[in-house]
Length: 109
Image (cartoon, rainbow, N blue to C red):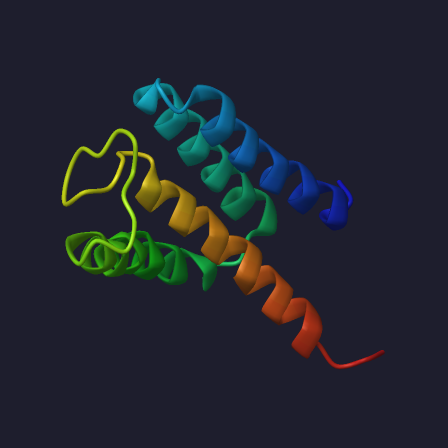
């Protein structure tokens, strides 16, 4: 599969799932986790896995600080002021950034 198409569909799926299904947190978690797993499996980049988990945990924790200080809030927070699906979105975003970084820093042929 064309990698540009893969990542375009991946981004659209993440945004659509959250936008259209935000009241169904478990379904959004399922969709985002399966999408993230699919990209990691297709890419076969083992270095993406620790990046995914660091951002999966770190992104929501940093957002929780902002939420605590009243910077913003979420409609359906579950734990520490964030929705259940937010860590998965952060993890998936890390995959896009990691791939973009690899693509932009790859030496020209």
